[in-house]
Length: 357
Image 1 (cartoon, rainbow, N blue to C red):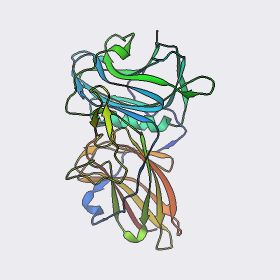
Image 2: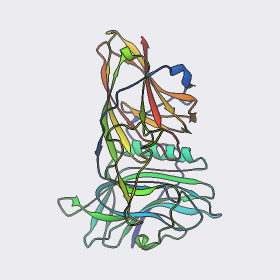
Image 3: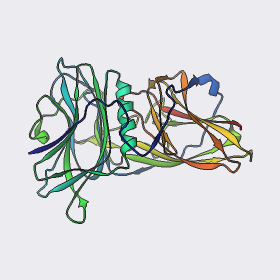
Image 4: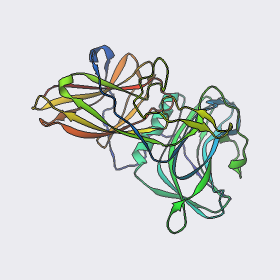
């Protein structure tokens, strides 16, 4: 037996109580206009939440099969990004199978699935929908032993399917964490046992499981600094790494003998920042918030103080003006959320500017 939720192409944000940016044409500026800028002190990040299952290998596929599979328990998040190179339409998504001996209640705690010919647009759509729905805990299914729940979408030739979904699996009257098996896969006819579908060979991209799906930390900015920046999800290592302490965690590939892997770019990880702004001028200032994809390109999503903003196409040569806001004489504390969208390349460099109001 199986339960199924098939999603069509996502054209808008799923109904959430969060306010959305109304600007139909996001503003970009030349990156040179924000420089020179000083590097903000890197915050210490803490990994929080349950497991993250990352499925990005093989990124392109030409037939049916599983991309990645692992067990998870309690709260966990699944992120996938796959492009269909088969001549026919295939369905791509995740199946959650109750492989225990008890009935499992499976909850959704945020879900986004985007399909688009542009890889970064598919990722942006998925992330925006996820952020819009992440505070809406809904019962997806009660799974008897052996039952599976599907969240997937038809994906045509040369179309990318990008998804980010958070689940909670519990059992019993006390809602104790329950273990399930998650399989990211493509299929033409829905399999009765997704947990038994053969896994496709990997490519040069990444698949694996990581200890935590969130990072939390505090950014500190003083208006006396002028223009200042911080790199988020830069390379984990090597020449281009500017990672924050605690930003990356070691993962493992459950398919290939638990070999060690790294999620370079932290795809699927939500950064939940508190930003403390000190106003050394002691009179109202206008603060500008910008994002520059250093070394890359893409479409991005940022939630700033309960409002979701989506960028247009942004390259390393430009910076997206996410928002401008008034800062009181005594400064203020703000909350933000962000994640690197599927298909986007290069770290997200956040810039703060300020001027007299």
